[in-house]
Image (cartoon, rainbow, N blue to C red; front, side):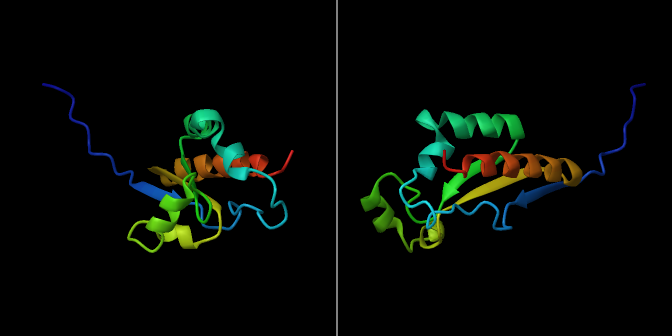
Length: 118
């Protein structure tokens, strides 16, 4: 007879960064390219951060899209509501509560480092 294990009681949680620490200080540094700094060449910086932290990292809000005409066309449409918000970094993670919180803290720390103009 095989080993009969109980089903896991651990619930998966989804955490989102909504505490304002991910807002981009655009007004203080208008000439600095924060989107380029966060995404990196061909999105490599964001992909590397995602791999290191286990979180999904997205630049959202006004001026987050490269194509300004497309941004204007999509503004106000369903699933594009973020285009009416200030430029910000949205970080999401899905894991058990304690692991998700640890991953989120690490991702927020790493993104904050990128939000300091060089």
